[in-house]
Amino acid sequence: MSLKIELSHISKRFKREWILKDISLAFEEGLSYAVSGPNGSGKSTLLRILAAYLTPSKGQLQFSRNGRKLELSEVYQFLSYAAPYIDLIGELTLTEMIRFHQQFKSFQENLSPKEVIELLDMKSSRNKPVKNFSSGMKQRLKLVLNICTDTPILLLDEPTSNLDQQGVDWYLSLIERFRQDRLVVVASNVPTDFQFCKHLINIQDYK
Image (cartoon, rainbow, N blue to C red; front, side, top):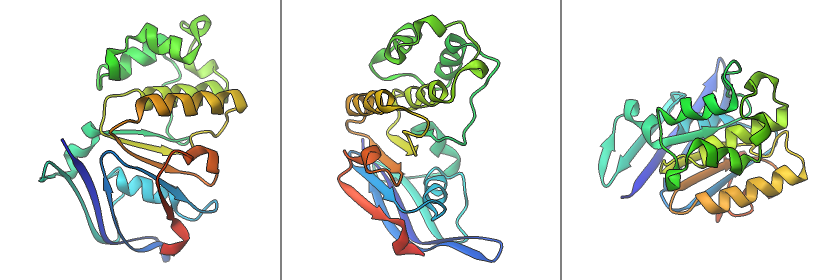
């Protein structure tokens, strides 16, 4: 199966300020893309457009799978999206959060909640409410939930934010294991975050 995202002359503005201008790009399943640029340059805006979360001010956004056009309302089921600004449900324990996520989307390799917790190396925190996690623990949980989910599209915004060096190494190992054959887009100005990506998009080219 082949999934494709096509942007044709996409532009986005907030109030009177144009954040992105005239983007024409194609993203294909099986390839990894990095979106780089300084803070505030529009990287997150582009990811939200790719997730069909934001509507472009101009241009056309099209998703297709095996040549069939997808409605924007269908896109969520093919998508995993991790970002610092996406909240977790703090009242749930770690185990409950993983099971809740699993009700909507399954994990690759038929991973069980126990195996996901082992991947996180958080066995001692399995019954701890997520709201009591450190910022680094929350980021690892966001990453594991989305990187391990069985979806053809994976969007990651600043994936190593709040992670120490051990956490960065863990992320790189996790993404290497679970990114194969997926359409991966990483938005970051930290080269380590997207060192595995073959295609580089400089957001400054669309200002």
